Image 1: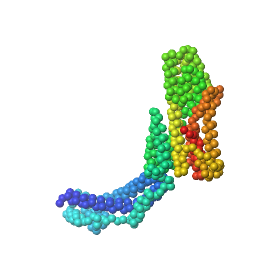
Image 2: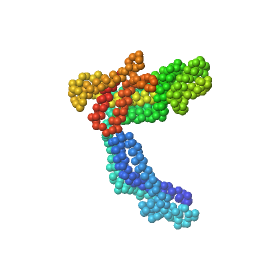
Image 3: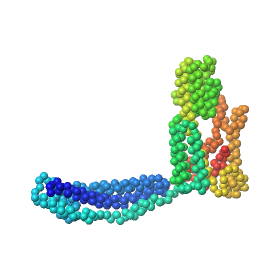
Image 4: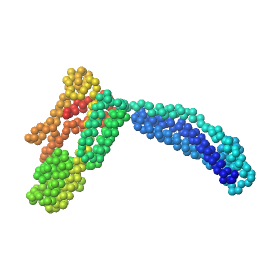
Length: 494
């Protein structure tokens, strides 16, 4: 037997011994880590199940198990050391009197004496009959006896009940849940029906679909749905703020009479009154084409320049982010017959109208989200003995004893009269000869301009504010109920 074959035989045996030592050390380290980490993870999972609906339980479990496995691997590798160290441990456990470690050191020498060869062969013969499982048995630490208890606590932590009321997995017999799902479906249909959906609306629809799926399966509660709708509303309002169109809207309301006074800009003004900003931008582009093609007479151009100049003077601002600067540039370009300058000013105003149209679309989506939140809260009134619809005459009055008498309206007659008066307030007269319209008349300097405000939008705005206050402030449940019923009572009919 030559030196190479002896070294290979001894190396294979040491490799088996090192694997056994690694398993022995890693198992003991895993048991210690499990006893420490699993109870800590169980406490975190129990808290997550209790107050967070179990959203982070899987992550905590994976983190704890990964930590225990990582500790076992690191300590197992650290316990191996060099091959000589493993050979010394094998000699100690098998009581070989350093035969294996000495033979491994002899094989590293360049030349071997007869005594060295004899000792190497003796070590190989001794190792051939060794049972490594018996020589290197599993030695569990004292803490290992608590490992089953830690594993049991870890498993039971997933079954801690949540403090939030969870939805039912099957909602076929729950009229409240069916009505709430119908509200979410109605909101989705309203958003999908919009033409040329912007990126923000597509994101809202995607989140709405995911939220509806989770709500139907019972993975989230009604409160979670309300919170998510509020988050989407805040995100859209943040987008509206980034557009920076608040000043543009006030400027447009101020110059609208001047635009309506000119025949050239009258179509654009009418489109703006109808909140059709895309059409207004198209009319402005058509006006620029007419001026460039010289389809307007000198008198019409002078009149248009005077109107635009008056509108610019009313605004006063001539910066690039204001309509005043564009109107002043357009007026000067018409006076100088600078068609290119007039077209550039019209393009800038068209871009601003596009931003206003986008802001108007986001605002309508926010109103739809507010209506959906109000509708979800109103669905809680669908209970045995109560139905949404026309209210019946109550026997008692409102006040502190509202709802205690045998009445279909828990607020009594006062709330119904308040709702009727609120609807009557909206039926006010417009301009002379226009007849009664559902609008509010706003008087400004030297002009009358109407702001068409839908009763549903006004109700949704105030209901959303009330809902936000209820969520943030510490308000008794009885008071919350009366606030919700109040907004249900004054909700405008279709």
